[in-house]
Image (cartoon, rainbow, N blue to C red; front, side, top):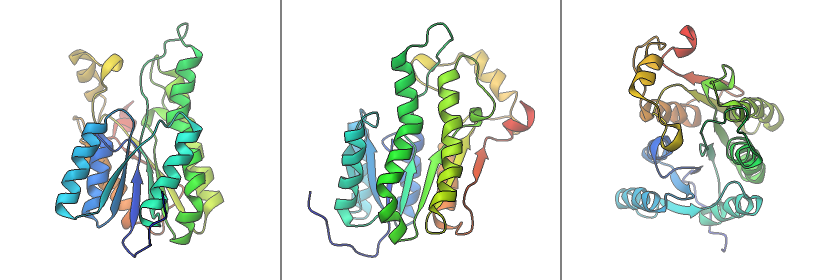
Length: 252
């Protein structure tokens, strides 16, 4: 892919942008005037639909790239192709994540590799690959952490370990990439209930809500607006992990 001519409109890459929180984040940044590189892996149809919606409002302002973030060659290709689209990068949002229980006694290497790769390895290597481009435009990185990076979730040892590493990665990158690149993280609480094998019963959902100071689950827009704030309106914030959890960490 040939490198496109650079212009002044900022560009953001959001991983896992096809659905749920990632789609809300991408939409917020698009509304803020960014051109969007929408990464997806399996949810291609959803990503293409989101891209078409963005381009209907602002032609040529969004593009979909497909990559498996567990593979180094895909991470390298994603970074190169994202830069080739518009010739610049101003914000990287490492949102893509695997999440499912790993009860001790049943954990295998595939679980370890999947959860570590999506939650820790890919944010590191994608950030590294895009550092020169981000540095040129005093850009920023936002990593998606989790409140359970510090407060372990039962039967999720590998996921929690990966997110704990993500938090330290965020702080380390903030130190190493300053003063040119700001790096922050967001730790969501109960925003969207998990899907597939991690689904929760209604009783379990109510138990969780009972531990939230605001007594309700959040919304993807709560996370998306926080990302927008960190990217657009927080030039003097770096190395921070912002909990967007309705006060859950106050009570649990």
